[in-house]
Image (cartoon, rainbow, N blue to C red; front, side, top):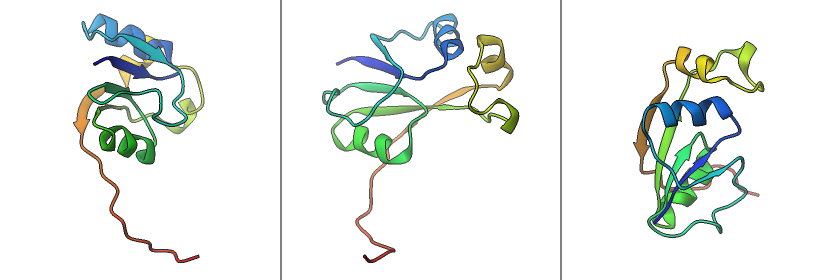
Amino acid sequence: MSTIVISRHAGLLRWLNEKGIEFDHHWTHLDDCRQLCPGDQVIGNLPIHLAAKVCKMGGSYIHVCLNVPENLRGHELTAEQVLALNPELRVYDIQEINHSYFKS
């Protein structure tokens, strides 16, 4: 079992380190979940479909809750900016419900 942080923000990594939150790996991106093993913990701000895949394959998903204002979106966040956004870590169990709203 590994703990993996998925984020492109170096400031988030610094904040996690300052909070004493240990992790085994840091990835800047997750295309799919083939790199993960059952039991892995993923910390990040993933799109919901990828977070659901983490949970489906037996991992746990810890979401980094940040209310990023529009003027900071798409920019690298410093640790100070991350801290100013009052980050929270919340564990979610996300599952897809097989229901199609749109028929092709």
